[in-house]
Image (spheres, one colour):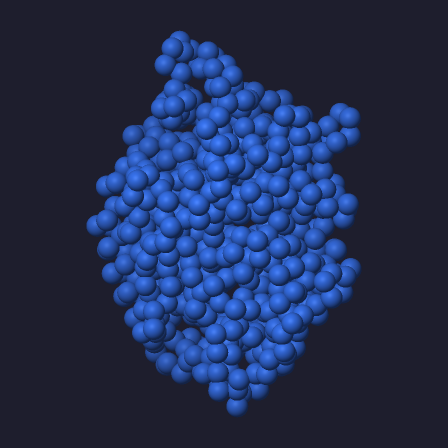
Length: 597
């Protein structure tokens, strides 16, 4: 038997971003003894990178906005691959969650008459994003964090979960380790919520921070849960491309929402060449006329620069490939010619300081160099829309690690409202399940097996270290499973990933367990390889282009064959990854009518 700390709870929440905090708050409010486990420091969650705003049909700027329009925008943005019930609940409940945040102390920007101000974002018919300058995610985390700590929720910081524990077919807790000391912890829980975020560190260029190694996706998969639509990966169109030390760091969509325009090396506003056919202004004789046409058609005051993210990212990629890119492989994002210095520094303070301090670029006087960066994964753990329950008993998921809500492409601003809507639902369902469950006892044999696997890298003297494997994996995912995909490259990626798995199985580390980053990465590699294989396999199965999934050998959507199917990933009885498809849930007639208008 190994030595470990034992902690018994009704509900444990793994991940302390917006979804995890909201889940923990709700579970605790229902009377469940709750623990919040976070890989990094509390407040360091990637939610703080969601700068532009939180989408909710409050109707403060456009009174005609309502949940039905928001629902329709979300479904259309997701290319109709969304779980309709999740999109409906999200649109209906987002206003209440935003008002709740304000009641808990969130300080939003205001309209002249004192209501919460809302800004434009791509794919939203109306200005709908409540915001705090360009620091909305930070304000959301601050508010939820203070509320959680005030309610007495136990927090385990710098603590990484390695595996989930099971009793038969039910999840009953987790095995984890302290990152500083390497000492082990075992959490026994009646219900477990996963809210671990995304998978960005599987790619070479990403806006995601070091924590995003696909932990929740892989923990659920290893425990027997299903993943859906892992091929749907969002490349945010505007990440920093220079200097190299900050390549991939996000440039908020709020820059374009507040008037910024995209231009190529010839100074042309190229996005007018990429307006989808059903938006084309064929009779426009000038940019000004096309601009006015676009505003009239879709009530979007910022022109094609605010098309959905997948379309803008592909357009930038095309301009760069055509030789019309910026000196460092991106395009130019210019807000200085349309907005005053005072306006930019007031509305976009983080962007101003980010470029000034990190790239020595004054965005009030010169354009930014931006390009696509792996930003978000729409695919994730399969959950029930109403309860956030996974396909394994005792396990729930919310936020980016949960699939279904965003379909094939997420609209900007929907991530923050997704976190609080489904974080609340996951916490509520977990607390209700815990109320009727018996307290589990630790399975010592299972714990010993997990710990043996965790400590195995220390026993391999002279073996390859983990850093080269991660670098090779990231380059493979960036070049072969990136924005544009083909069957031959996806097959090559899978073959390479198989080779990386063999190398990782023999990886070795030096030193001891106390704060050993090499050991941490050796364990993270298991998650990174699992989610990378899932993405590559799912991308090869979906033989069409839809949202964040673009196949050069299958251009355009194939609605008849793929428009009503999820790609499903599960672990087979032999431990190998299985890929299947399943039909989307059928949308009721009263909601289908919204798309006939």
